[in-house]
Amino acid sequence: MKDSVIEVNNLNKVYKLYPRPIDRFFEAISFSGKVRHQDFNALSDINFSIGKGQTVGILGKNGAGKSTLLKILTGVLTPSSGNVQVKGRISSLLELGAGFNPEYTGLENIFFQGTLLGYSKEEVELKLSAILDFADIGDFIHQPVRLYSSGMFARLAFSVAINVEPDVLMVDEALSVGDAGFQLKCMLKMQELQEKGVTILFVSHDTQSVIRFCQSVMIMQNGKLIEFSDDVITAAKNYEKKVRNLGSSEIVDKTKVVLQEQSYESELGDIKEVRFGSGTTKIASVEFYDSTGKKETHFEPGDDIVLRCLIDSSIVQKSAVLGFSLRNTKGVDVAGDNTLLAKGILDLDKGQYHIDFSFTLNIPSGDYFLYIGIASLDGERVELDQRWPLRKLVVSGGREVVGVAYCPSRVDIVKV
Image (cartoon, rainbow, N blue to C red; front, side, top):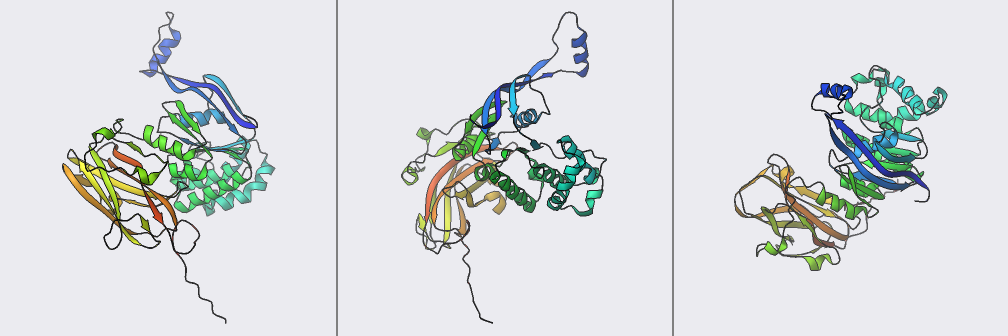
């Protein structure tokens, strides 16, 4: 790629796993060459190129190889084979408090981190005010970091990482420990870095953050890069379908759907529904009703509506959760809920159920797509039936507003 900042070719990382620690010693002194370890391929034949100023999200389950990849890119780990080239100054937030000395104060650790990044003491002092203002941990900056909460760790570590003017920033799920206000503050700061042309690699389990923030996405599974795409929304769907499905890998066979199930392909137009799950409990149909009880797909902002789901369970299903979201044409969730938050865990007997969500449609004019799914939380999460998207909802009327919520203000002007 022209103007590429990161180039990775045929990257592999192999760890030797020994049944017992002493087996490593016996293997080392063995004259017979007996192998006492098993190879674990943490990364296998990874190839990609990232251009200057590109923001790339990395999705994958725990153990997919995301953190190992970032550690190799930052030089914390060495590859077993292959070539890695990263141009420019790298700043990273790989693990909470990684690189901090727990006995040093927060202030001492700022200078310590600055030294590791190649800055002189004088250069760090020039950035100190910005770092302290962003971290906003008060007098705790003079306390040993071993006394810090996870949130304080995150504040200080992220503040150092983003205020050293990096060419490349790598963030590995470290923001999930901060409070909502701090997470928003971090995202706004990273958007500022985007505008300055900083190349960003962003590891997250939150597909919506990746959709909103990233221009490209990498999907990793079992140490392999299975997809690298600029079509972030489609790739995120593939991630949900291929990687995050912790239950049965069986795709629901539409030829075996019960008679009550309905198709809404004509509503979706060129968009194709993605459907997967074990199929033991299915979402047979979904209807929208207005305040008079009439079926409808066209509404106005502020209307009271009912979302009715017909659920068909072929078995007794314990600890079920049904949830939905309405996404706009940019792929952003603008409204949604689930039965776990509203009513708690559902225990379903064999048979059919109507489950209604009643709410006010406080969203502005536009086209919206219904993403809906049911899963079992009885032990390990198992996807039962996921349908993305299933229906299209049209909202029209009302005046223009700012944002994704319809909250028009009444403006009073009084001359004083």
